[in-house]
Image 1 (cartoon, rainbow, N blue to C red):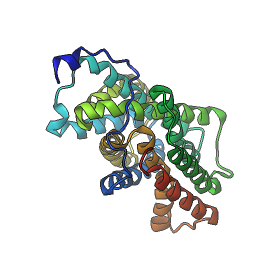
Image 2 (cartoon, rainbow, N blue to C red; image 1 turned 90 degrees about the vertical axis):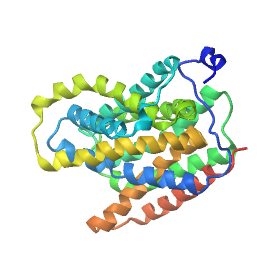
Image 3 (cartoon, one colour; image 1 turned 180 degrees about the horizontal axis):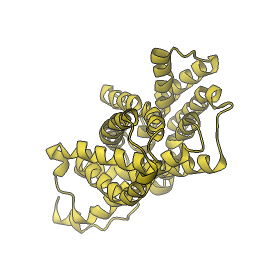
Image 4 (tube, rainbow, N blue to C red; image 1 turned 135 degrees about the vertical axis):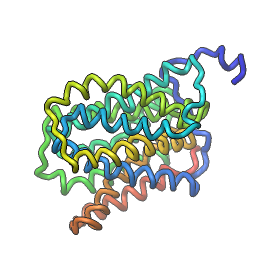
Amino acid sequence: MSEATQRVRRPLLEAGSGSRTEAFGAQEWLLLASIALIWGSSFLFIDVGLEAFRPGVVALARVALGVAALALFPAARRPVDRQDLPRVAFLGLIWAGLPLALFPLAQQWIDSSVAGMLNGAVPLFGAAWAVLLLRRPLGRTQTLGLLVGFAGVVAISWPEVQGSRATTLGAGLVVLAVVLYGLAVNLAVPLQQRYGALPVLLRAQLTALVLLAPFGLWSLPGSRLEWGAALAMLPLGILGTGLAFVLMTTLVGRVGGPRGAVATYFIPVVAIALGVAFLGERVAPVALLGTGLVLGGAWLTSRREA
């Protein structure tokens, strides 16, 4: 990085456009599919973990495992300029520290199906933050794609949401997490473009680990050790908090926050596929319609930006 670049003073809430304005290629679709596959199972692992661990323990365990996984890669220890460290720390707060505590807290009062549906609003909040921070409107095709995709998420989730346990407090906590996610996918863009995903995510998640440590330690007395819950933390932390965050950071650096966040639209699609494949669940017709809307919305969002 040149001295002139280092002297530039950047705002804390610094967003950026993706490095690729073209339609998604094979690499972008592969990143998107991998993220959806990993995060599509995260709500299930959270539910299993909450059978024995209190929310603070679940949050702390998954971030600790994510940090451990990232630290194995030498590239994650590449330096980050000192002036960007506050931005990386803030990213850790809003992308890992607070939301990863809010979701297990919320799932004490709402079912995972409701949490999953509300989580589908991440691309919409990502688009709203992008318009606010970049001071330019989103393309009409991408806007239509985001709206169609979210309609698909609602359609997929609706049969499970009917009769589900939900409270205003639980839903409010998830919405707060989703608003923070929408901001995070935009702030991650310029950081990924300057340093790559690994150095940014390792430092961001270390910040989250420090912030979550008191919450996790405070929750220990009310938790008990059960092997099923403990084993559920491994994929939740190593894959869901380590690998998937790296893949998402890479994707938004390439295509921008709103277009990259469309990966979350596929999370309920993955959840349905897992239920059919391993639990023999039946798929409601409206869920099939919703899957079609998600696919159509994702395709529209992935088109070349105007």
